[in-house]
Every structure is written in structure tokens, then in C-alpha cells.
Image (cartoon, rainbow, N blue to C red; front, side):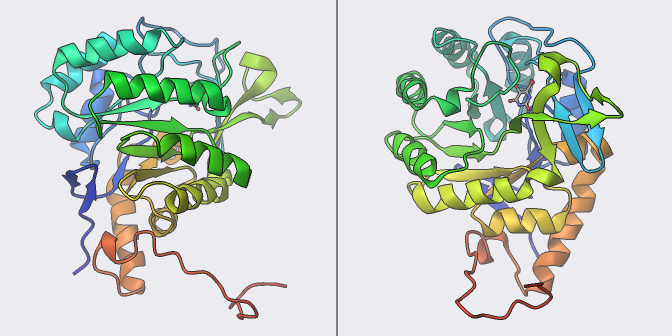
Length: 319
Ligand code: RRO
């Protein structure tokens, strides 16, 4: 009998599937939908101290199984999402995303969260690619270290984690892991959208802000997400868990993220394109994939990626 129950950050979930921040989570009624669709849990839209309307339209574009967005951090403000999570009977299992606009916003956000009594997990978004004039913190390692140091002073150990941008170099995996391993963080979430991609429709940029540059999501980015999940799984302290995000469109994709070391997996583009009915579908697809390999639980294969050996034949591969 195949079971999808999973443990994450000392909590128990009936499956590893949840939304990715930004998708289907900006308003209370959208969060209600996620609960109704039996997602394992939800993460709220990254919140800033004040409400923001974000970038001008058109700012989101779907193309096949991919998406490009330059939303620009539109959100209702931290109080609005705190109001929701603190009334949620399962608040301990929820993830609350924050995106400090400046370093000085972090203590303000932390104070509001701590004062609210929220007992869930906090995701600090260090990787929004779409705020004009604001580089991604995750690509500035000195700043990133300063944010982590501050977060460690503001939040209880093992209650917070970070959402990272994709990295493309072993030196960067090493540096980031070294910074993260200094602190008692509960999790990392890899990856945010691949920043500042460009899509063209007919002869025009597909979106308006930043001359068409925006965060790429969906099937295209799965190999990048898998490399980041795998690289951090190899490098992070064993008690830092990983949320795998990026390019999951079906159960097989989720299987691959978990094989690389993810404890939870998030749905972004596919959720935006197919709606909340995707949770039940993808749960069944993952169960089928596990059954194919004889696995009965997530722990049977989590982080157990096998390495091909020199001169092994790959069935079906062209070479
Ligand atoms: O709101 C956005 O433009 C946005 C954010 Br905060 C993020 O973290 N990732 C993304 O692709 N878009």
C-alpha cells in the first residue's frame, strides 16, 4: 500500500504537495481553496510591511507548460495574511512567506509575526527577481549572510527557512551552503523562478515590466531546480530540510525532486494553469510512480538518487 505521508520540520503532512508562494495564495478565499483541495498545506503570498499593488499589466504569461511573470510583489500586507494564519486551526503546519523590501523591514515583519502568536514556519524570500531596482538578495552573499544573522536573532531556531534563487556554479552552491549551515534554519526552498528571462509573442515581449524580463517557471526549469535540490541536499546540515520547487507538472517530476532530497514539493505554474484539482491528480501520479519502483513510502526513496556508473548503458538514451 503506497503512502504519501511525509515529515517536514517536525510536522506531519498527508502528502508532500503544496502551492508555491505567489500562486493561488494572495487572498483569503484563494487560501481557502487550497485547504479545500486538500493540498498538504499552503504558503501565503510573500508579504511586505505595507500592501503593494505590484508592477503594471500585462505581467503574467503562460506558454505551454511554462510561465513568465513580473508581478512585482503585489500583496495585501503582512497583517492581512497574519489575520488568516492565526485563525487557521492548523497554523502550526502552515508556511508564512515574507519579503523584506529593505534590511530594516526584517525586524518589523518579525515583530508583527512574533506578536501575532503564529506558531507555524516562516519562509524568508531572498529571491524575488521582479522588483525594479532591487537585486535578488540571494545573489549577494554578504547581504544574504547579514539577513541570516538577523533572522537568527529575530526568530526561534528551526522555525524559519529561506527561498533561494537558482544557482549555476559549484562555487555558489558551496558558498551559500556554508552561510546557511551557520544557523539553525528549518529549511531551504529551491528554487524561485529563473530570473529575468524573456519570452516573445509574435514580435512583442510577452509581458510589459522591465522591457519584458521576468521570472521563468514551469517545465523548462525542472533540470535547474533538480540540480539545486540535489546540490543543497549534499551540502546542507542533515537537519536542514529541502522544499523542492520548479518545473513540477506531474507525479514523475515530484518523484525526481524527492529522489534529489526534497521533503515537500511546491506547485507553481501547473497550479496557475490547471487550478486546485491538480493536487488530487498529482498525488495519484506520484503513487503510481512509487508503485512502479516498489516504494511504499516517501522515506523509501527520499534523497536516494542513484549515480550512473562509468560505461553503464542507458536504456533509450541517444549517444
Ligand atoms: O511577485 C513577484 O513578482 C514574484 C516573487 Br515575490 C517571487 O518571489 N518570485 C516570482 O517569480 N515573482
